[in-house]
Image 1 (cartoon, helix red, strand yellow):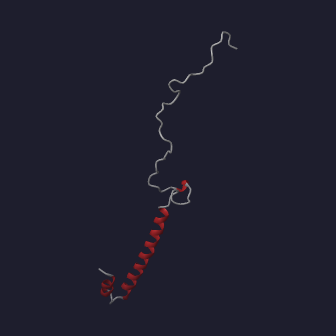
Image 2 (image 1 turned 90 degrees about the horizontal axis):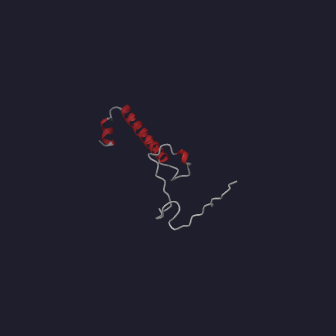
Image 3 (image 1 turned 90 degrees about the vertical axis):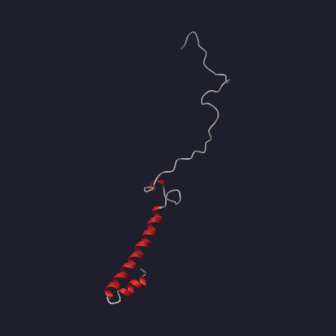
Length: 93
């Protein structure tokens, strides 16, 4: 039903019309409040100037992105590199 149809049905009772109008204003106020609260909830440290410690309601944290690329080299000393060690002595100190 449209607003005009509802008001036409309630013409005989002005209290019902006043109640409907008050409900409409309450719905508008709550809708505006919901929009403002949702916009605050959608702010994170990534899209605003808020610190990361204020990210309480974030659904999931994003994975950290490393800028380092994987090397083809094995870790440690490489093949063909001459090692340097201390020579053994006959009388250690």
